[in-house]
Amino acid sequence: MKPETAAKKLGLYLPATPQEFQDNAVTHGELRDLQNNPPEWLEKLRLEGPHPRPVVAQKLGITIAALKRSELEQPMTTAQIKDLLADQPEWLRTARTQLAEQRKAEESAETSAEES
Image (cartoon, rainbow, N blue to C red; front, top):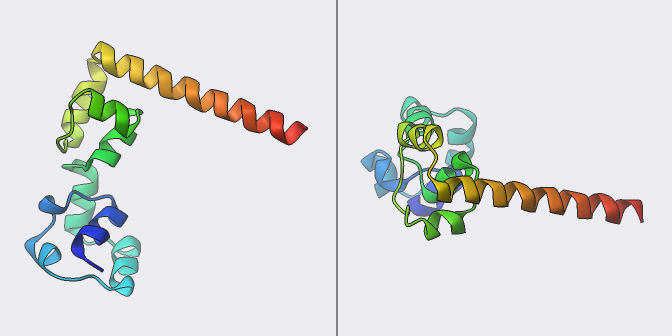
């Protein structure tokens, strides 16, 4: 598979990966090995970032759409995410609340459907 696809499956920001990873195709076996036995560079990227947009949204507890609306489309490091969570702007508090309410409503709907 292409390096872009492998990076996406691993939750990585491709430009932050080693050049060798960026330049070479990854087999399914190699992908499994990276997932099961991550090398030091992969563990460090997962811990410190920079993280791609889906990972940033997950760590912030918001949707990717909310991240786009806030115009934060650049990759972020773990430290930047922690700083943002520590001093949450209004848009982040609102987005987190909306997602939590949406999930609660979906959970309630699923429970109601199971009881029927």
